[in-house]
Image 1 (cartoon, each protein chain N blue to C red):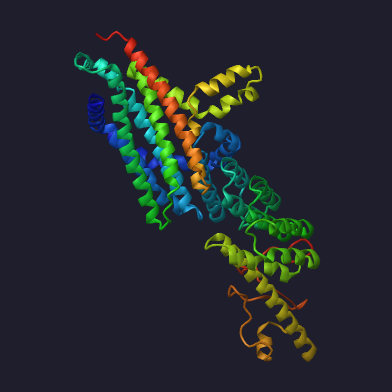
Image 2: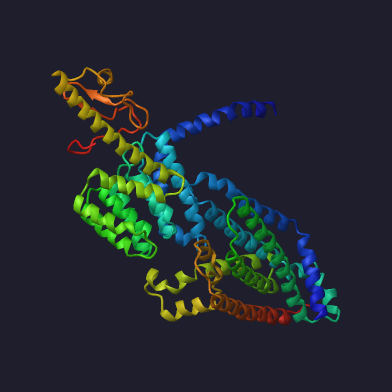
Length: 290
Length: 254
């Protein structure tokens, strides 16, 4: 009896330690195996009549996985696409899984998986499964244009969306703008503003707002860049820091982006950009486009 | 008729005394209320998750109640030898079988009503609008549960409680896989058409009673659909109860 009590006292604190060791060695692989071996169609066959409930449970798991990897996983999202696939196989009409899933997949790391090909594939699957849903087509058009830089396909899909019942009137003009103006910033702003105004409170709205603030920050950086050139024309040299613009009366306040972070300034080139420490900073696109 | 009602009332009183009934109903209610917690883990799916969990729990636990209580309806009476004095009275075997069915059916009706009230209260706690369409799914679910009771009663009249439970569960599972049975040829190419068709039409098609996904997605459910589902349930119930009666009548219980 005494021995049992001692064993209990020793084993209880040991168990979490052992579990952590097992998780560290097998955790990721176990989860991957589960997602890979149990596909949505297999789960459908396993639980006829409970597909919708299973889709909910898998959706909860997807959201938790995304949140967990974003905070603690160092931006590794290997299971995200298979999980979203399982959810949408279980319930092909779960609109939110396509829309949020595409955002989770398309956004650049560490915010998302940075795999927009798969994000767009999820939206295409959503459009196939829900041919009368204009929101999914609208998102597909936006994502083709914004993330895959394909204005032609993006505009075509937006035109399709505009013809569906219930679609907002401005989709058609936006499609035309995308087609003729291509990837200019004003078009991007219109897209994200549309997303922001339509989205309910939550990550989708927050994500659209983050993009709008990013575009505002790019505008501000360009405007400050123009002031740097004006300063150079006036004094014959570039300012040593952006504070010199303020001292010269060219700027009224401290130059900060919409998140409150100061802009980065390179005296060598005179380039003003969003600072790496700012929450609005994003890696450069190929070709130097921020 | 009075004798049938007396058996039904007695069966109802007997079943509501079963502790397992309260455990299952409580568990179903807890699961429904757990939707409130689950919604915190999701993004903008509160109402849908609560409906899915509530309707799923109602169906699962309703089926468990129907099976666990249904398989003992006749066999327990035989095992406890309480059936013999009953049959010695002026009570027809048909009245006994139908009375047992009606009694457990009423127990299930009360339980389904309690679980439905729990689901609506949980939805009200999230300020979701009242959705009367859910009642259509609950109604067809109840018809499916009545069919489970009838099957359990049939097996109960045939064999012991244990075997009756196994037989009923096998038929419920087979009935849920009816779509796969119909398309059996795709899985097993050698299956003759007549076999898959015969199985498909002979087995109780429990998918008919499943409107959960439709009401959760706010799809319209026309009254004609409900009419056909009711007709299917009535016809199948008549066949199964008729079989149960025939089996019970053929048993030498004197």
